[in-house]
Image 1 (cartoon, rainbow, N blue to C red):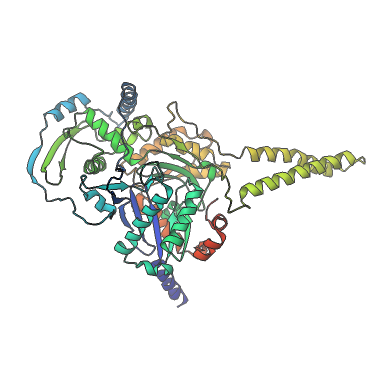
Image 2: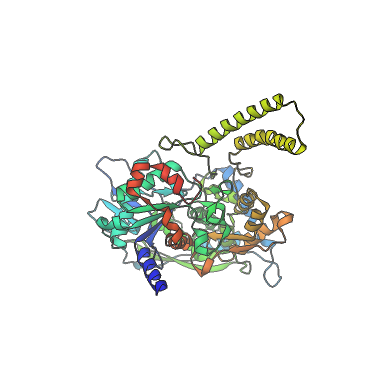
Length: 565
């Protein structure tokens, strides 16, 4: 009987917990008791005021102008990947073969679309001043709306253009989250004081943004309590430890996680993801005379089409060789429907493999590598790690001075044991001091073009683990989550790339690359993990209430967060 009561209580509790997982492209949001979250485009369109400045975030990362040098560098990288693929074997032991791009291009140039009557799709007509989510895609481009995505490259989209201030981004998030709560989840805003929220935050975070997001949830939207969760994927996959690779639409992050805690020095984020793969795929298709010549990635509908073509065509199946014939349909409001037939070859493999050859991502410009910076402190929280570090450093200096004075005063011979203790204390103190100064995270070693491939990011992340035992654990389990790397066969490619480069002393271990944890969509893993964790008994001490937040501020976040602040 008590077990039954407990499970009922857990079920009721799960229904009042809202899990929020925002990404650069999509927002996943739902009750902890839901099987799957509500997934919508993480965007808001606001009607422009008369004479207001125009601003529209694009669906895909913007392509940069292609100079002669850029095209040459990308072509060299493409050839490198193509040669690697041609040196691979099929599963039956035969060598792979590829159809020359010129031959594919000759077919595609002769391909003309089949024209049929205009489709029934219409632009939406609206009197509203604010449009949220997927409806943004159905807005007529000629309507006076500005389009904002609150997240870009895995971080808040703060910029110098219209609607780019931190306050504006917070207002956009409030609008989107309240829309999902009321329209998709049927929760009246006045009842939110009875609900609690869990927000999934990036591996590498900006502490100022976390403060603002907590204020947004507790004070502006009005949840009864909340907490922030950094790494939820291992909970969703049912793993105690893993090197977690999270490939989103615009960012790829790697960090080593043990018992739900991400080790700070192992975290790295690269500014490329699934959207960059889409743009690279479009560049490769254009090289083969893509028959839909009017395709424009900056157009919302064309961007959606290209993303769909990437999902349908791209793979890393080495048994698929030569050219394949494919079809796709272009539908636009008030325009004739066009059905195209085209041939594709190894372009379908080269695009996903650009994760390992990131020079191909130069089509969307430069891509920075980020690591977790040490906290610079907050005036609201004077007793933070900086205070502890400085006071302990001062204390050690005083101890050093006292110890040296005692040594000078001591004239009587001491026992060997005591002498060893004193020497150890004197030797270790300066080392500890220098170690603390060197505690700043090491930069990741990037290639000549300031780019870091996925396999090198994984290897360098694991190499930054503090102990040999931890490194051995991480080499044995790599968990791939996020929606940016859902290509058939890419897990085996990552397995082979890492296996070839694992340091000799760890090679005896079995290496598991998990790309579909528990047979679920890897894009849902983190959301599911947060839902599981939020209902655990141990999570009860993590909740932060509104009054507590208003009274104590960022200190309670540092003390209670389930990650190293």
